[in-house]
Image 1 (tube, helix red, strand yellow):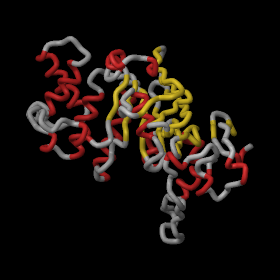
Image 2 (tube, one colour; image 1 turned 180 degrees about the vertical axis):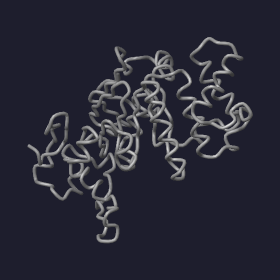
Image 3 (tube, rainbow, N blue to C red; image 1 turned 90 degrees about the horizontal axis):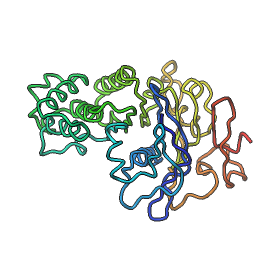
Length: 313
């Protein structure tokens, strides 16, 4: 359904996202993985056509079924967002309008794309809130965002994103700032909704525990590039990129919780101004070689298992 090909995003001449390529099938879940600053959220905003004013797509394309989103006008994109592709933003407290009731905000999402009466829209709001597990929705339509817990605010955001039954849902760190119990509830909800509606789900996260439970496909991002792209089973059985290996090595071993010190990946993600043309992970990589300063090819090392690393040439 969704095909992103060589997507490149620049801000004032600096490349933030470089030649990102992935696809998403109906009913499947793709997880975009990586630490903060790797370009996951910027990629999602580019797909939605919601980039900041100073950001531009300078290369590549985004296709949804037979439509090319990257060539559409803002008016055309407004007919796609919500109806064909929805998004759950990272922090619901800053995404919801603090001076409007939740009932009015969800109703607005419905009326934006459907020509129905206010009464019918109100009924749809109650159905949506019930579908996402919002307790006593009729009694709480007049509540404001600040009167809700973090988990309930996130459920409102999910209801708004599902208002017009989109074919694809992008969830950007949907469990940020929620406690562990509520995180689990939200993830179970997303998985159930994607299954019941045969909907493609793109989940942005840095939590590999969430990835192991949710993903069908995994795209590992580093410094604005996808460095490894494969199935969940292949990724956890045999990660190929040194960055992917480092991320998995940082996880605690539940079988031997007290027998070893957790390793870390030294250094930090390079800022856009310091990124060259070679492997962007080379300064932090234990396998770095002289040729890592040259451009890195995208290699299919195994069937449907892609990696950008000179080590596999």
